[in-house]
Length: 611
Image 1 (cartoon, rainbow, N blue to C red):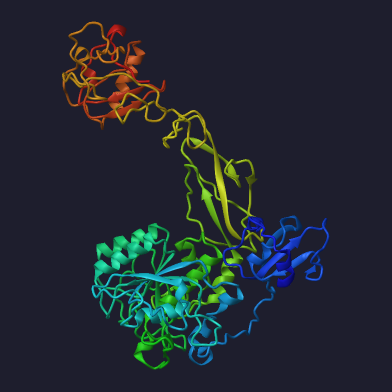
Image 2: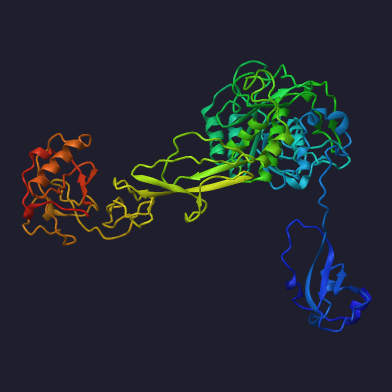
């Protein structure tokens, strides 16, 4: 074939542009050249049904352009057969040394086609031995925070490599051990070179993990001190949407260890091979679930082909090794549905855990022992709801998940002050009404609440979008132009406000700080602002004890003024508060003045009005 193509010897410049978009990770073997059907088949001896297979793109480009319809990679396809239920990986030590993993169906992800691919996990630990034969070095990156200056790829202590291997040991590669989520992206934050590391370095690593967009943080570390510094950093991670998993501690008592004890963190305790809670595992409210943490085989930090296989050694046990089991499960979940929240991951762990110990939650087992297959089947067998309330409120706490086989016959009824609920809609434009979720629904469902004003005048425009329309129902909002920026322009719609109001006797505009002397003390009788020419009729009142708190008396006095037919829209100067009249005129209460002492105001001496 190469000889025939060489004889043609015509360079097809730019032919590569006919290649279709190639999937980033798709594997292929050479290229397919589709020959046009309306020309003589010069290469009939080498082509089948008009398709010519070449080894390189250069070879393809030697075919004359007029003979070619398109070129594409010769992609591999695969059989869609499910992995058998009794499938066992061929890793050398799996069968003999990973009974703990087998007890929770730790490789259940394989049967669901999940390996953690594309999920970034941050390990705040002692680094990772990236040269180990059972880790994929291409998936590992990191940063050193330890004062010794060693890179993240140096693990002097061994803890980080052991932890990372539980999650990401390459599976079914005929060597070593099997990992639960072998294709995760590992971000190794090297804080420890021995058993202890500083709070400052741990917190710096957590914050870097947030900046690196880690989706999961694995923290097999802790302290009995509830440090505000640590608490703040962990909360920042949770607020950023990171799933935070932490070991509960190894003292075997009821003392809380942090960060596992922080709200929102998934605290993991340990069970032994007989599925009894480990004697060393903490027993307190920080235990959310348990996982195998005794007789655990691990990767060695000291050699590329080293393994820690003495299952009786104290080096092979700890809640540190139970936590990464849950870390790996979270990675499988986020590969399945990247939009899952930390709360949803935790809730699915709760729903699918095997209850051990006392019935229901207890402080030894938490909600029970995790099971990888049950967890993933749960994700496939439930659906979750997102309610976009558009200013409304739900009166009851709702479940995070619903069984797909049941659906949801009755949707919740939200409330919103000043509005009536119209219904739930499937689209943001609110055209497709949804009255129930049918059985068989799965995944994440989003509904949008629709409202209509009920005449109570509660419409608001708070988004700064400049439309002066209610953000809840879209009706014209009872909103008056405001000028918080003091530039005489409405902050919402940029309409010129243009009225200067002087503080009492100060000769300075309360909005912009420019002089307004003619309006401030009544020396000028034309009642026009010296700066903008707008009419400004500033009144003078005696200082007294009206405060912002007694708005009710202000409203009463305004009503009396209106009843008398007098002008009642007044400027009273000092700290800013406000009332809103039914005619949409904004009254600024700007001082400690007493309305009862105000004279009745004739029209020619009324104060400035902001509309």
